[in-house]
Image 1: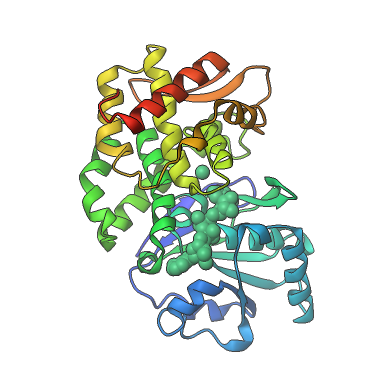
Image 2 (image 1 turned 180 degrees about the vertical axis):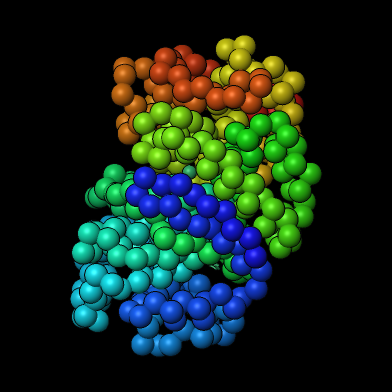
Length: 361
Ligand SMILES: NC(=O)c1ccc[n+]([C@@H]2O[C@H](COP(=O)([O-])OP(=O)(O)OC[C@H]3O[C@@H](n4cnc5c(N)ncnc54)[C@H](O)[C@@H]3O)[C@@H](O)[C@H]2O)c1
Ligand SMILES: [Zn+2]
């Protein structure tokens, strides 16, 4: 068992890496508690690590992106109030980013803040979203536009949850892991490349290693900018074009895989601008980005007009130009506000060629 401490302006909190599955029972120390558990996680782990949770203390939640909204929040308020929830209640959430976002929002707002514990069960939630304090809900067709900053008091990471994750969800998490390791520099990138074969097999020790490294890198980018007004913006590397592609595909491309495409795109822009040497771009492309991409791509996803439209709607965009976080050859990142429509067209042509002609650089 090892622990990392995270500083937050809301409250400091801890991330504990659990070596075995006996970490649930000690939650009985909280006098009033409710476990909100992703229904799929419950189904897979009810006879194992979750076996000790009494029926009266658990609430199963069927997750879907469509349910990540205020209606679900109100349903949970109802459930909590019907159990006579008081300010001293502890909410223990077990699931991926959707459970995290909904229950985190509930925990941050009911009685202006309940004690909240989070047990992430997806690669994305373990390696990325469990730290950073954000809770996000969708409003109508707008994704993640309603939310709060409210970290859990404790995060507990148990890598064996990941053995039951669907391949698509595993690969989606992998995209964020790749992004964080590139953002960590050449050394962490190389380490990830070396571990990739074992990681794909979900070997527990490799999973623990890369989750720990991902969180340490994310923590470094959040330091001093918890509320996302400066350096933390750089975590949007791969997301500017990635989000647009995710939308253009009607969400057929899982988020993390769209982020991988977004990094391929951003790096080609960096190479064209002379910020990244072609050799470095090629190394990242061949050794890491293409190897972590496993999604069928269709030509209609690359419609320049639609992609441009989506990029213009980027909620982080403030000026008149398009936003793009670009990688430099020393692996530092820079947020550009002057990304042009011509560069977008050029980049899209490049992607079309890459996926038709594998020799493209
Ligand atoms: N708050 C933040 O900082 C933050 C950051 C990134 C993403 N997000 C949000 O997170 C959501 C995506 O989260 P996610 O990728 O963790 O997945 P998820 O919560 O959408 O879960 C994906 C699927 O995996 C299932 N599942 C979860 N754990 C499992 C397990 N151990 N075994 C088998 N099945 C399991 C779920 O039931 C679901 O079907 C999005 O809504 C995104 O906006 C939030
Ligand atoms: Zn992301």
